[in-house]
Every structure is written in C-alpha cells, then in structure tokens.
Image 1 (cartoon, rainbow, N blue to C red):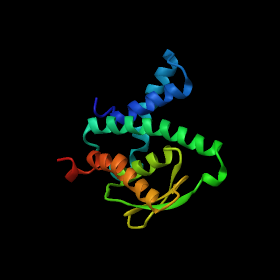
Image 2 (cartoon, helix red, strand yellow):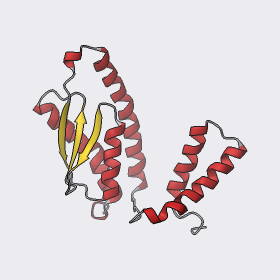
Image 3 (cartoon, rainbow, N blue to C red):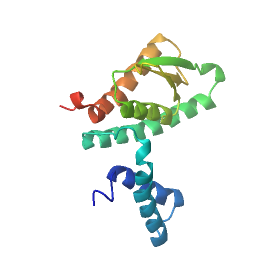
Image 4 (cartoon, rainbow, N blue to C red):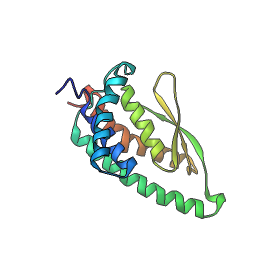
Length: 169
C-alpha cells in the first residue's frame, strides 16, 4: 500500500479538490479523481527535491481552521474598506522577519498570507529571512508592527510547530 500511495495527504487533498472542482461525487468522477490522486504524486515525485515532513497533525487542523476564519473576517474588512472612502485605504509594503527556516513552511506562510484578503506575499529575501508583504490597509508604524506580530503569532509559529523538528519537541 505504501508503494501505491507515497504521499497520502497529498493524494487525499487532490482527490477532494477534484470532486469539489467538478461539483460531483458520481462514481465516474470518484474513479477519475482517485486515479489522478494516485498518479500525480508518482509522476511529479522527481520534481520534489526533499519531501516535506509535517508534524503535529492537531496543529495543522487548528491552523487550517484559523486560516479559514481569518479569510472570512478579512473579506468583510476589505469589503468595508472598498465600499468606504478611497482616502481611508493606506496600502504599504512590509518586510516580515522570519524565524521559520523550512522551505515548505515558508511556502505555506507565503500562501496563507496571499489567501487572506488584504495581504499579498510579494517577495522573499535571498537569505529567506524576510517575507515582503503588501498590505491593503496599514496606515502607520503601529499598524505595521501589529501586522507583523499577527502574521508571526497566528501563522508562522504554528508552521514552525508543524515543519521544524526542533520546535516540535
């Protein structure tokens, strides 16, 4: 079984994504989804330099829930800003210092920041110690510090627990 399913979480995610994208759980879609979910990881295995080794499944679920809630809250906040006066919007680029060193963790953090309305990952420094974030509404240095603290505590810290061995103990 392990030879057939090398990355079970990825295969499960691909299977669920396939069914959701097709808006169907018919037998044919399930069979095609299962085939793709097993084949894609095998066909793309040579493209992955290292396999990610996530730990702490509970932390992963809590982070996923937090991200979903933050996406809803951010959508509401951004909608209020857009529907309000344009002069109220204060966009800014912010360099967020990273304690996270795992490349998969950094990629996950950049993705989470981009998925949350009102923020966008724009770049990462060459030394992977800073993530450049474009924020839709950061009007002063205090708001910038609050944004950095939010990203670090809400997303980076759980990702350290999930991806970095020394943090998992």
